[in-house]
Length: 378
Image (cartoon, rainbow, N blue to C red; front, side):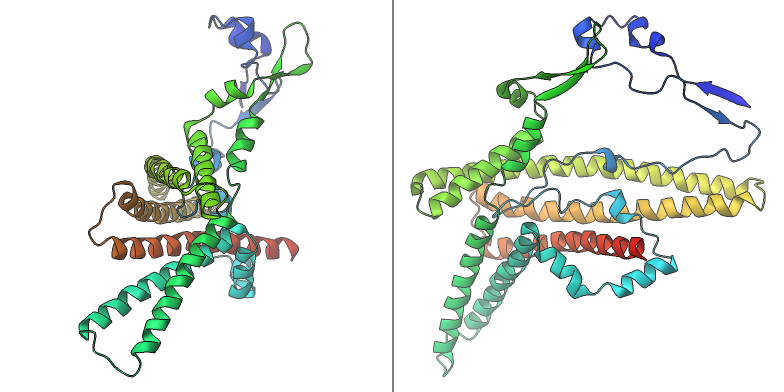
């Protein structure tokens, strides 16, 4: 049996010739057990392994953009833990049948992000209906009929409802800047170990220093959420309209750049998932062509099939996220660049598409949570 041991503390970075001083080396002290080791059988045709975890599980998505108003970031993000249910398992199928759609929507509505999605669906559904209503009215050459007065009143009520829903969504997500601010404040205290004393202490940075070293997406989210709140306060009449208009334009630019950043992150994540998927498929092919024993092959194949199914599901939802981000980018481009051609039609359809896609992600996340709760209780 071959034994592989981890290096001891004496063979750490201090003895590697890295040239770190005492101040820098405090952040690089090893935190693992120096006596730990593992055994591996070199004669085994299938050495023990565990499915590789996607980089998505280790990536902190600090910014998931929204528009009118900004969306919450954490609630909508699907992690690998949300997609690890085995759909072929009989217990999972039974639990999915027991979870009612009304129960899932109830859990969604309990969150501010869920209410925002529900109102967004209604708001842009009304806007799309008004577009079709206007086209039908134009095709009739504005002929007067007995129901024309009722139709005009209906259009006015629906227009007022859509505007009211937009304002309500802004009020629901006031103080959204608290989330990035919490992340920045949490980084003010950095644990470190001193060479003279083995006890851990806390080094407190100034808030300005922490702010300067914060990740750009977090800073962008903080500024965007603050500008959104200023624009909302202006609509409430607490701030001048001119200040609110400038804050709204600045928020649009922040949302535009944040959407571009999210698209780049989405592309990187998809590349990682695709490479892992190809690796698992290649491993399954090699195992099918190798002379594996009849006892070990089914177990390994089952693990690989489950991993491949999870990776494919992650890639599917990453594609859904990419489509949603593209819709957001088209939507905000009309405001940022002041585009006029077909503005009402494009913003209505892209807003509705973005609402449907983001609601689907939220629905899947809450459904997975409820199914796991049933499986753990049974």
